[in-house]
Image 1 (tube, rainbow, N blue to C red):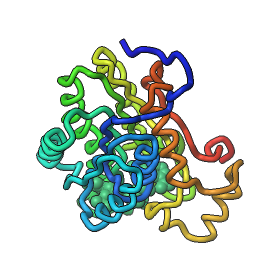
Image 2: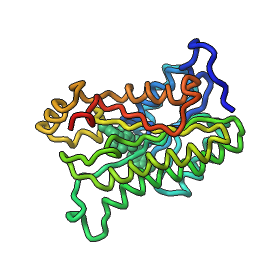
Image 3: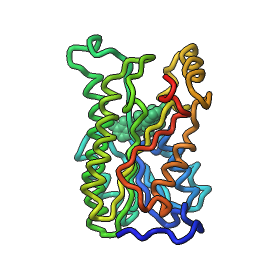
Length: 264
Ligand SMILES: NC(=O)c1ccc[n+]([C@@H]2O[C@H](COP(=O)([O-])OP(=O)(O)OC[C@H]3O[C@@H](n4cnc5c(N)ncnc54)[C@H](OP(=O)(O)O)[C@@H]3O)[C@@H](O)[C@H]2O)c1
């Protein structure tokens, strides 16, 4: 059983915890890596772009923990398995897993190519990547017997059909990630592993740069809080979900979108 907190002192701290973050080299993943490093965690970044990973590690070093990057393509189970072995060897036990790596596409289904390339690419990365990581790192966490926290980065697109941009593979993959979170919370609770998801709305990252200026203005006007979010704000929520403060939370989906889905 996971012990409840007795006071707020250090309730949000992650000192000495080992966190694995897919796509931690940039965007929301880097915001999460920064927030966790500032909160005392060691961070292992799993990604494909080594140059961007080196930049991220250089930024993280100011926080005084252990930081390293590992090559990993989350769509490839063998690559994930190799990364899990490498992280275990270098960091030891894993306490926190953030399944953040993701891609999107903008296209109506009937306009996709003959191979449905966009559909498979998004589903293989956003859904199957999350499954691959949970399978390999979940076994490490279970076998270590120390419990842990898994945080899946879904999207508010899991809950709505976005009329401004057609993105059915993305919406469906993220909706599946949300329900995968529920399933894993039930399956992994007996190992003291908590599984929660975050559903961000619009945030300033590479992924959102394809939004045309007029749509950017429209979205901001639709949002009760009137602005795109910053990656560190998702990081703050991820720290909460990884920390002792959320010891009684599992199987939840936390929307962080400036109120966007309330007013579309
Ligand atoms: N930005 C938003 O407004 C927003 C809103 C809702 C949800 N999200 C979700 O938040 C997550 C991060 O998005 P972002 O905006 O930060 O995107 P981003 O800036 O485009 O970064 C995507 C990240 O995913 C990694 N990645 C992609 N495919 C991968 C693969 N096959 N194997 C390993 N890593 C892979 C990339 O690593 P490499 O650099 O190595 O390719 C990169 O670090 C995604 O799951 C996204 O769906 C974002």
